[in-house]
Image (cartoon, rainbow, N blue to C red; front, side, top):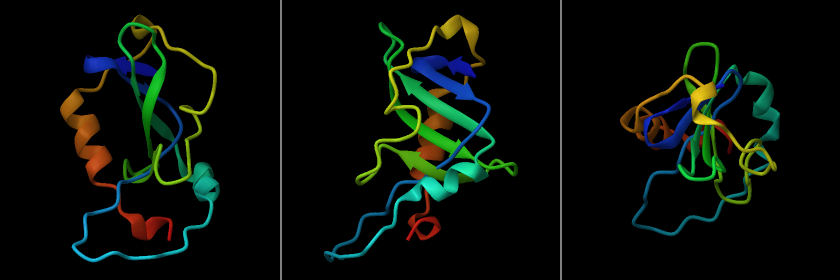
Length: 112
């Protein structure tokens, strides 16, 4: 795992993406996205700077495609929902811009 600027951490292992806004309400059924965890090879984790607590996670597959994000809908995440904290000096850093781009690129069709 690695930590980047603005408290982002890279962890070798996972992925997700955020839904796009819609002017019309939509009611859909989303199954538990845990089945996607096996596809994740790298995790990018946003952490709270002062405590190292994970806030958001992005899971990437072997082709560096975002396959999941968390928290999202009812899924708190794999890393975010754990009691782990991170020391920034122990991890590789990714930029805040890269993390946000990955987060915003999440395609909900992967999990619906």
